[in-house]
Image (cartoon, each protein chain N blue to C red):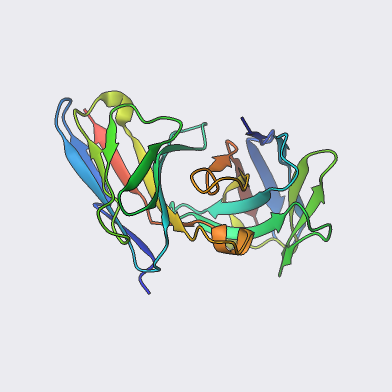
Length: 117
Length: 118
């Protein structure tokens, strides 16, 4: 199993540009999510999905779009990049089922570092 | 809304010594899950240990153990026999099981940077 993979590892954008951060998992997890990590603020939830075709907003959704057409993939789109979106982005996945905290443990990808100039 | 507080931004410990990282949380839920994640310089988020609130026994994973005090809403992480490879940022996280749509949301603390020295 590759686990959770993210591409690219690092990206530089100019203000106003758009891009898509890719996330894929091969563990057949229903739940997938995107977090951003900023200095001194921990990880904050951007968007999440509980299955193909179902997405919802997290704590900081503005400026980001998501879609989930397959169980495996959960891309994050920046529509018009702003310097405030400079951050490290993490994708995570887990099961949703009734297995309690063991199944709901989230596994993280390696992160994408984004710099918006 | 749940909140997670890590009051120690930075800590240092000598190799082979024991260190305890603090975490407190605020919730009105009765059952929930708590996690400690480690983030080394590589930035990978690695699960260290996890605890379910219904379980009174403190979780242990090799050199890592927790002191879970439900009434005090405290979930501290103890690292025994510290090793240089333990140098990392440590995040405490909270999850409240609920409806399908909210069941897996993690709320993170701001982290504690741990430096293990020779």
